[in-house]
Image (cartoon, rainbow, N blue to C red; front, side, top):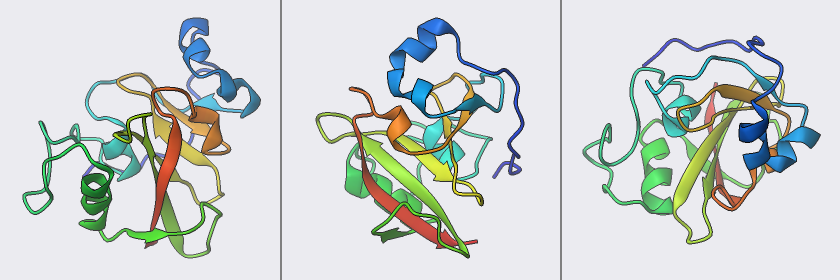
Length: 153
């Protein structure tokens, strides 16, 4: 897996066109932390992998069903040692991931909690960002966080 990246600011804000796609981010004190790349997606980023794109058509563990379901994506993270938990609140000794689903219940995004309680996300093949809450990304395509997982740091 890729080397863990730290939070550093590349640019203060997304382009106005991109920011318009995520209107709640303006209230979230987000910042860009990497330049855009198509080397990896949000699911890989949430799992600390910057070397490949994670979805059933690209990288996917053999023991996880290759389906676009919340259960499959939870099992994907489970294969890395993540376990479901009840809260997105920061817990000492744990790293958390949030899986978002769209309005049809299909996994559409994932974010990872950082050691200070903020969250980091990869926006498609655009930039990585740091945001203060999981709610800042909730829009039609990412709709809502469906599951929170954690694993010991």
